[in-house]
Length: 365
Ligand code: NAD
Image (cartoon, rainbow, N blue to C red; front, side):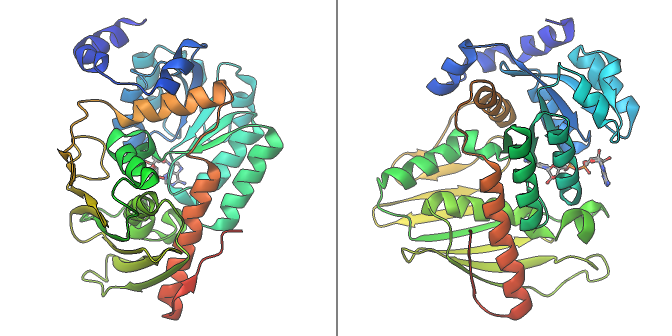
């Protein structure tokens, strides 16, 4: 273990030791060597969350970087103890393919280029983790899934909340129906975007707040319903800064309808800091308020247990360890490309409803 890794673990070791790992993950940890991972795109999420989490993971380690800025790769190479020869530019997929230390490429670039990066990584013969939203169209999702099948490699999406115990409790309640089925959900997710970044460029982001933040509310409501919505109605809200949001929406309201009659009302926007979620069933509720979908210190309660407390951990460590174990041990995954595609079908329906002003029936096949 490198000195840096040891000192980092020293500071968080006490916290890490307290992790209650899921039995499946514990079993997987014991069964084999860590896989090697290359981060593709070294922006805020890679450097701020994924790279630190990769100092804690057991089933996967950072062995390479694919970046437009070599110096960023050098920093990571020093911190994670990999060879600087394993830093590649975005057009060096042949070299990525030739490096047997890389088992997984984690694509953390803007959504508009996810498909291009993912398909190239499959072409290089690697497994892939792709950040959310999976792509900017269902057609791209299909092409990504097909490329994985052709390469005989697996695809996972960066849906870290499936590995978060607060959200696992929502899934447990939904599946066990301990409170009965959740029939009414409300959620809001957004932040005030002040900087001109790719998030407001249609080509790179695919859309506005919906693609980046609303997707969490949609995903949470599907977890609560334990089903995919059958119809969606949405309306874009008036822009407060039309000069800033010239290509994408600033905010919107969405209604999802489920086959059993459950309904979800969602707000998403880039003009207010909001993070809320509420799911109500006949015999109880699950509620979260600021933060609900974020990385840590989630404020989640249920009608029976009050405020939940699962201690300190990194969702990203759990997510990457879980996905890597599934890849390595050929186990099933929940956070599949098909799940990422499901969300793109819903998102496509939302934009269609905004365009037509009508309810849109969703078709997943
Ligand atoms: P960012 O802008 O901080 O980083 C994006 C990186 O992509 C930069 O390093 C940039 O140089 C690189 N890049 C490569 N090709 C590019 C191109 N053609 N145009 C622009 N940039 C290019 O963004 P981020 O916040 O790190 O987001 C990256 C991805 O991660 C997005 O898909 C985002 O939705 C996702 N994300 C997920 C979470 C999560 O909690 N799962 C959190 C944040 C971001």
